[in-house]
Image (spheres, helix red, strand yellow):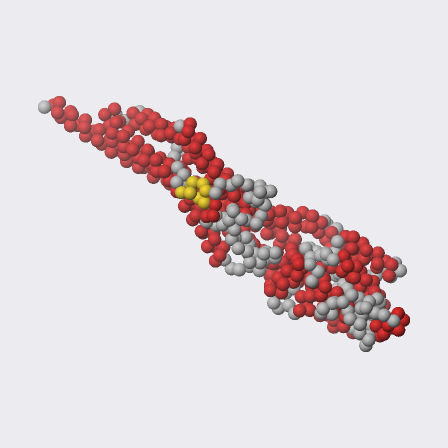
Amino acid sequence: MGVDSYLELFTTLYGWQLYNNIWGILMATGLVFIPFIVILIRNFVSVNTSMEANAGSAALVRRMEIDIVLALTVVVLAGQPAINLHMNDLSFTPPATLDNPAPTAVDPSSTGTTFGHPDGGFTGAPSSVPVPVWWYGVMALSSGINQAIITGFPATNELREIERAMRSLYIEDANLRHEVNQFYSRCYVPARSKFQRDQPSAAAPILANQGRDDPDWIGSHVYRQLPGYYDSLNAGNPVPGFPVDMSRETDQYWMDTSGSLSHGIPTCQQWWEDASHGLRQRLLEDNSRTQRVVTWVQSRFPGLTVEERQDTLARNILEQAPQSYVDSVASLRERDTGGMDLPGPLSFSVLGMVGSGNELFTQGVSAIGLVSFYTLFMEPTLALILQALPFIQALTLMGIYAMLPLVLLFGMYQPSILLVGAIAIFTVKFWAVLWHITLWVDNNLLQSLYTGTSLLERVGPDLKSILLTTIIAGLYLGLPVIWSAMMGWVGFKAVGAINSATSELSSSSKQAGQQGGNLANRVATKGKGR
């Protein structure tokens, strides 16, 4: 029997354990028999106050037979626990993520989470708990329908997960951060200054292909492709990993002056692009999470060339640099340029990678507070909603399971309670399907609004992302509310129909009793006449 979250594995068992505790209390105190007493009294009073005395006994017996049989049926099917729900009967298959692209189903005995862990919560869950036949069937049917719909739904690319993963990239190795600083000061700042000074017309085709903001980051194609920039500048000092190459003038000069050289001194272009020891490649291999993102992007965006994928990921990694690193880069910029105000954002804070177009948007929208609202409220709120919804569903179901004995008792074991409880359980469990639909819509809208690599290249929020996040957050909350309201109306109408049918059944028995009583009166009267 499938469930929809790690927590539900345990709340299902605890919910039915609470059900058994409450049902046991009702049985031990005799409260469970009160509805039968009420049935007897209600029928006795109703029959004897609305019929002739001679016909009342017959109607009383027939109506009580029907009401008691219906009540006993409800108790047997939905009240008395009968089928054991074992811990291993429950399973949950987590969605695919960056860290676990091919998840396997888990059960409460081994979830791989802190739920049920000796050092965590929800420990001591019962290994087996009895469940009434009706509710066991309702749960099994609801879970089966959910799994069938979700499995049969079109596949989704999990673009929202990719977007979050891109924003989580970072530089872990302190030596690599230092090397990026060195590259910035020895390669990027001189190249940027030369570009601003010369404004070469040969850069126009490159800018048309790579975007106007290409010169605003250290891996710029302009500086790598135009002669006189990265091909002419060099690291200045030996860089670990690069072998000594006497064909390079830098290596020859060092050997002539120092007489020893353990590592080579590459040009800035070699320093960035080298497939084995280049700075770009080392950024992509810095930590295991970054490597998984590289693999994931490659599988989800097969149309990207190797260079496009490497440049996009390297640019995002540098964008996620910690604040202390940003400060150090800003200090380097001020020192290496003599305080000259180079064009771009703090721009070159985060290595000058925020393009002028996005900067213009950000500055304009920040004036009315949308960017701050999105960054500080909307995005965290959506993430919080996604984390909280499975918890809400699991705890709601636990509450429904636990309170069913009292619902049966106060409902006087009416058959309509079977439908009410079934609709409640099915409605809450179906929330998972609605959330999956919302996830599918979210990913397809992302794919439509950000075609190609624009999703990976986007830095900071824009109007489309703000609008989309607002819509998706509303769907995650709104669809379950609308669905629950609709099912509540369906339940109300269905309960009315069941009660009407039960009343007609009782009325038929009442009429039969009246007819039997009248017949007996006629026979007795004729007998007296003779």
